[in-house]
Amino acid sequence: MSRLVIVSNRVADPSAGPQSGGLAVAVGAALQDGNGLWFGWSGEIVENDATDRSGVNLERSGNVTVATVPLSKRDYENYYLGYANRVLWPVFHYRLDLAEFDNAALSGYKAVNQRFAKSIAALIDPDDVVWIHDYHLIPLAAELRKLGVDNRIGFFLHIPFPPPEMVSAVPEHDWLFDTLFAYDVVGFQTEQDAANFRRYAAETDDGAGPVTHPFRNSGRMTDIRSFPIGIDVDSFIEMAETTDATNRIARLVRGDVTNHVIGVERLDYSKGLPDRFRAFRRFLEMYPEERKKTVLMQIAPPTRGELAAYTEIRTELEQLSGSINGAFGDFDWTPVRYIHRSVPRETLAALFRGSKVGLVTPLRDGMNLVAKEYVAAQVPDDPGVLILSQFAGAAADLEEALIVNPYDADEVAQALSKAVTMDLGERRDRHQKLLTRVRKNDIVKWRTDFLNCLRGEAA
Ligand code: ADQ
Image (cartoon, rainbow, N blue to C red; front, side, top):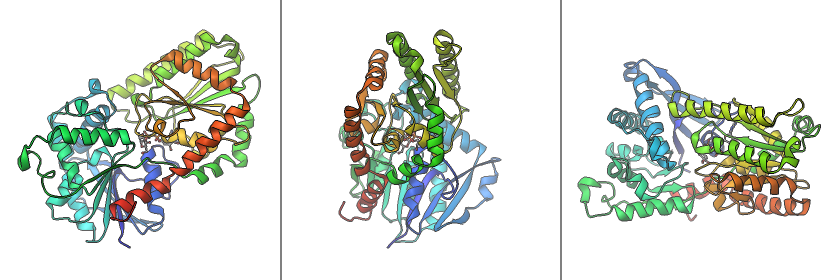
């Protein structure tokens, strides 16, 4: 069978320890059973001129070849922080207000995609299939095609694709989204994302022709579909069932605190953390009888700390947790426990298992793997309750969660009350159905469906 070549912005050592970030987790799993190659940025930032002379670093890790390149300071600033994270991340998460359009950032984005294409073209064989991931690398296939690469190339977008009214605010949207037609397969998380892209394509197909849309008019058939990403269910259950996990749960559930509520995500404005803290405050106001019984543990490791939007949200959360603890806390009770760092996945699994409520309320999220991990980690005989934002891709499938509007603090507070008072029968029933869904759309199905489609085999 042809070799699988995965390309993503960051490459993580597949044999290394815990990684936060859904992409690293999902891609690491996708490569394990093939003799594949993983290409991307090493994470290293070098002086500006150094990238011109530095080649690709090749290493074996298990049965995967890991090929990495460094980024120059300028590329890091323009491609990564600039275009990927100051333009595409906010726009794709419906936050046009946070987008900072800038020509230097756009040039950096184009240049890094061109450089990646040159390196990859030299590494691949004619029958390799190439699977490119995420918003950092949208034009990569177009650059590869320009170099004569004719392999099957697929793209998967891990984040949402918003309606055309929003993406067409990106000044260079004509160029950017035309490059998606250089792929054989373009995959989205949900049917809604795929429909948004199809509508964008239909509404901008104004007969502008090959000058404006060279790839759309090249005659290549691009398959546009949704492939909802999932988790490795059994390995997560295994992690949640260790003795260490059991001991942690015992330490968590003690004293008067019977309602342990858990939130886990990278500290990102798309995840709705300030709104969640405000909803938790509403819960404490509306249901005083639950006060000393309830603790919200929020684990939020920092990401992209160089960007102003991220430092602002950090300050806001510290103020909010401080003010909730100041207003409601007592000698023997701290309502919000806010932990600003990454934790091992085993610990996360244990925390999920020991928590009566999983509170997953992003304002916008491609899928959200934490919701699925929370379901997998539960004790089937006495499971906790998942509260899930209607704006997470996962909500399209996980119907038996308590689905909420994360902007509506009262609604989230009511869902919290419903979750902590739900009887065992209803909890078991909801959990069983949710676990069936999480199993059905797991990580294996995701990558098998995508790769079957990419290899032109029946999906
Ligand atoms: P993320 O935005 O990173 O992923 P998510 O899907 O929830 O969001 O995945 C996060 C992963 O990192 C989970 O596996 C979680 O357990 C882990 N993690 C989170 N906090 C951690 C911590 N403190 N310590 C250790 N591990 C932690 C992007 C998109 C999502 C999409 C995924 C996969 O934004 O919408 O679901 O890619 O496609």
